[in-house]
Length: 481
View 1 (tube, helix red, strand yellow):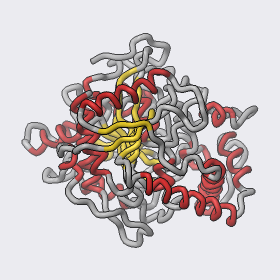
View 2 (cartoon, helix red, strand yellow):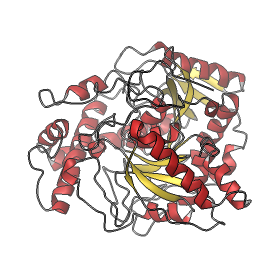
View 3 (cartoon, one colour):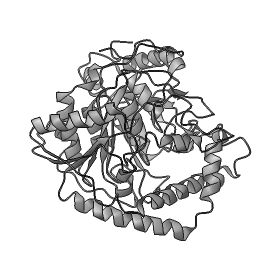
């Protein structure tokens, strides 16, 4: 089973095309890895009987995992990490699931997520915590942490994630993998959803290689019938962008968070090293921050919109389940968010959306001057398990503690709809991954893929792998290459 563990999805599919391996062999090897390693990781929570694909599809036979949030598969348990939905089974396939299967991916399971995606750590009461492959005492980040852990540990070469405010990019950074949030509407979220939180939500994957992310976006992007938004057209396949020279970019860089929080030196140093590398590669790099983040309406408006999102999530499930959650069926933090959110009026929500759209126009003007904005993905990490959880006696404790890490405005990409990515960029003094965040211009994934390909060639992160054995207790082994 280890013959394929560290091959990316493109390489695995190439073996199938050359008839050097059968799709069933790739799937059986991945299932064996999950059986061996998942009890310690707790990344995969629901097995799915595999369906075979055709050999002429771009990812024919490649094993794939789907996050247990938003992306439904008919006849499969669908919980969104909540005890309230423990017995829920999907009755339809989301469009993205159909496109993944048409691309040849073989879905073999669902990955763990925090309850309704509302936390930056994957520690749901329903399934228990997912452990970081680099140190099992640590969080993977959330809410796509189950998928990030599975990719980092080599269970599968790539796995589905979604992102309402950093939920692909945060776990990518803490698990040492590549995570891209596409432009708004690049990937359909239909047929169940149309406009999620005024277009904040995005679907894609976490991968070990840039080319896998690009090739899958080629395979699954494009509007579906009735989608409320459409992303700008692209000039060439994203996969071609990975190897295309990026040219000379004007890059804004910042290592100081808006709130003045203390940044882990390893994370600020990673951005400084990235800036030096990019200058050597011919780019223009200077200290700069997008206009609009200094608007006093930004923080309060975000709070209103994300609060309304919680009210929508619980209201959606009340309607679908036919009853509100009983005592103990949703976690203390979720209930606290919900109780607060129910006081938000429709008018307050729309005023907040209007304010964020005004700020988005200022950000768009900034991107007329700069090509990308680079910061640390987080302020440090990964957090110890338990630190970002809200217990019954203090349900908002995890939210308060999250401020130690979520300080670089990753949610700006969701507000504006711009593409953004977290790129692995070294390790801290504990041997744990560090990530660099790159925000791009609206509709311009091409520049991000070109830049990511350049960084991947200069600093190849896939050579570094977490410990081969993943115990459930304390460990001192962190990194091997």
